Length: 291
Image (cartoon, rainbow, N blue to C red; front, side, top):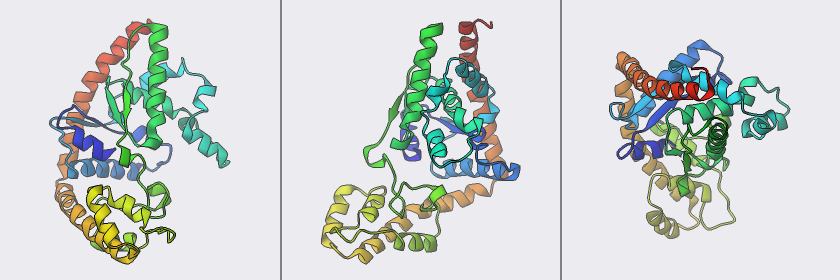
């Protein structure tokens, strides 16, 4: 998602939303919430996000998100929300499901539809979020008249699902990820622990991660020349990752030194986002008859 957003900003207006209200489903510590929010902004800036041309803001700074989510709640059925991946996963594991977890697709639909986007960059596992938004937009338009644009998902083929070092989807919850700002020692440790399949001629998990930072055509030749030498291939990946990550890590450290930059970026983003979201919410209120 980040890769797509950064690349798209040259030719498009990009909205980068920090979903702190969504995060309340898993983060219920005020100190951590503030720190994680700050970290995300710094991450975006370090990766090259341009807040002057585009918009980065906090969900909690724009009240229209929760307001529109309630409007969507009134036209959404419980059986429909029971199709949500997060709800089904929690239920399958016997977890007690919060209302926030059950209902988050409607807040996410509001996150998307308030800004009338054309495309939403996602991974394959997030495609359902866009489908929920489209369904909700279609239903609202059918009941109240044409109000929302129907967005479409954008999924880059080789980025549909990023593999982790254990072969599963890369995720912090699985602790199987390689940080975008990792130190060299961490890169070495993580890459050398990548699970490999000895039944083939190349380590597919290593190759899949490698394709994220180097053209597949180049890698095909390298992996053919080092067929069966998994240690050598991991060492090549380590060097490529070090080269790829070092400038981003250094830039992030530089940005983190400026205590006021994050506040300034979020304040500008808040003002820009509120102008767009407020206008759309006014349209919604007229459509439903409260104005």
